[in-house]
Length: 411
Image (cartoon, rainbow, N blue to C red; front, side, top):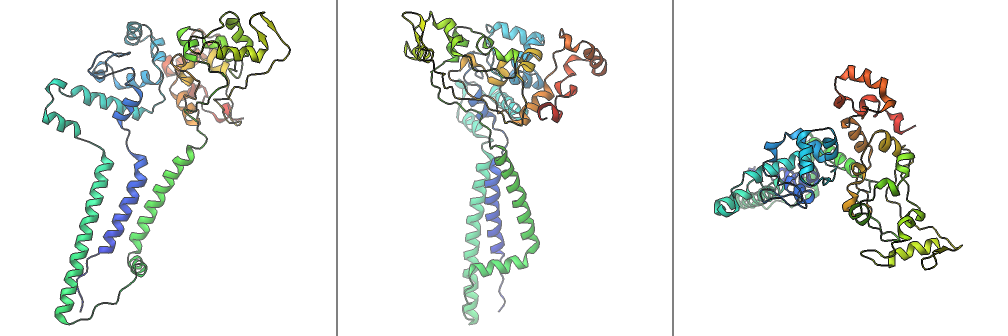
């Protein structure tokens, strides 16, 4: 007897494929504005709760256009130095506190703005009731909803499968037919695959493409040490030196203006101050004594001995040998602020790798950063030609003077 058979195995295979897709696709989720805001912004800003360190961001999307906000988040000092009145007034209003440049993608910044917009439109906390609580939950995690839907679908398929088997058993019993010979799952799979070759091919192609994209992103992350913060032989605090005491970065890293590398300052530079300052505000004499030991210096007699030993600093930033980077070209000629690549070290303790230092990160910077030609005699004639061609200094980016050519950094 020929009985009606639902394509249960096809549905099961679909569910398995859906679960696989969800697992892979989890890496391609849209930026989470709330998570990004809480990770990067809440230390200095609130939405509708008043000033923290920086301004209250409620309705910031109404005060400033989105393109302006993106430029400000990438590097606020670039906007301030461009002469933008709103930026200058804001900078002065908050005691010229420099906002840390953030290495966020434009889409991520847009998602943060969207989150701020949503938070700005919410009812005041005092008026929050059950309805307001329900509104907060609207538009939750899409991946979670998809996962719940997949689980429900799987349960429904299992129930339908059981009902089908029960109906077939009743029909066989009614017509006196024998029980079917059990078939192994592997054999059923082979039979199904043979009968659904096109569907199998499509599923395999989709999984192959998604797997390759996911694999590409995993491989692209190899060798990126963003956030790397090793312990150093001396507990040196940038916050105390660059922040509290206002020491200019280039006083210690003097090579940044004059050479290819910024360089680690020699202990003799430390002694310019610590010959007289013999005790730190946090660690007392312990860490400064390590400088004296390295120089074989006696603070009591103020004499140096013959047994000097270099301080074994741990390198933080390390570009591959195939890449050429010159600090003086960026710091002296281009006028790039240290914070752009290294973050706001005036707020940091131990040095860390702030930026990813990838090729894409450098190229993005070259594409959006205008060249500072005004007052730079190196560009006098070139500036006139480019200004006539593009019409505005803001449009003369590093890319437009050859800053993305391969041979600039790889030769």
